[in-house]
Amino acid sequence: MILVTGGTGFIGSHACLALAQAGHELLILDNLCNSRADVVDRLQRICGRRPLFVEGDVRDSAVLDEVFDRHRVTAVMHFAGLKAVGESVARPLEYYDNNVHGTLQLLAAMRRAEVRTFVFSSSATVYSDREGHVYRESSPRDATNPYGRGKLIVEDILADLHLAEPAWRIARLRYFNPVGAHESGLIGEDPRGVPNNLMPFVAQVAVGRREFLNVWGNDYPTPDGTGVRDYIHVVDLAEGHVAALDYLTREGGLLTVNLGAGRGHSVLEMIQAFEKASGRPVRYRIAERRAGDIAQFWADPSLAKMLLGWETKRGLDQMCADAWRWQQYCEGLS
Ligand code: NAD
Ligand code: UFG
Image (cartoon, rainbow, N blue to C red):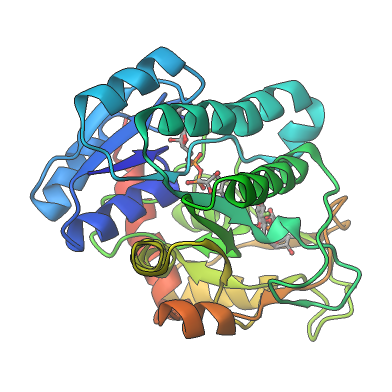
């Protein structure tokens, strides 16, 4: 059985589907601070089996010990955490507590239970932007905010742990920009309040929930002046997790890989693709650059292909079509 922390969230719920499809039994642990319990019902509708669900916090050792005592967990995928960069600047203690202390509590409980296979949600945010815009796993790392620093700290803790106790099998997966939704349209990203990220905002403009999108700057040194990112369909990302788990089971060790598509799209390209997929206009205004943004980056995904035999299969049109199907379903949720 795989323990999926944060399994009712955006990426975790898609990972649950990919794991279930690969034949794994699942136990989700989530405190629902950024997701809804009925995601579990929808997972059951899609895959025909109901994952076990425990409402609880990864910082709570008693809950963790009970989970490990009661169930034969063989590996942990750790998605639980807070993820808003701006909020992390305003509330650093909450971010370090959830994302760093939470991970330490989880690792300690795993060690008590003698479970030593761990897959961690890292991020392209760990790369520093000094060395060009194609990020390889060996590229320099740096952090400019508490969210990113938390990812760096956990990456380093995991490397230290593996050095001290080589029996651990650990994957540090560096995600680029996950977007889209499951093709069923039943699960996806449903941010609370005003979305920080581009795609959910675009989808909310298309559906009429918001009037227009602010495009943060059109004077970057990119082909059309707007920011360029490596958008990855969340189902491709989820499949990357299954491939990483298979790799750890086969090879062991400490795995660090980019999960990205290996090419970038600009903000204006994303808007156009979404208009095409939805048949709706996406109104936008050009605004000042957003503090902390950089012009462009994308992954070198070749290591994941070589080690895991994994690469992305779904392009921009599918990302937008699936996000649009989900956005329409989302409007009907209370
Ligand atoms: P999400 O907010 O949709 O999912 C996170 C889930 O964790 C939520 O269901 C939330 O309720 C739960 N959670 C938060 N703190 C918890 C705690 N202390 N105990 C138990 N549950 C808790 O976010 P997501 O986009 O699915 O991100 C998952 C992971 O991937 C995060 O670690 C995030 O930092 C990382 N990541 C996300 C992106 C992205 O752009 N979405 C990019 C890179 C990395
Ligand atoms: N953008 C807009 N308007 C918006 C939102 C975004 O123009 O309302 C632009 C941004 O300026 C950027 C691009 O759209 O050029 C993508 O922005 P996102 O906020 O969607 O994504 P980021 O690349 O800034 O950051 C995301 C996550 C980080 C993660 C990073 C790399 O929020 O946590 O991807 O994986 F670290």
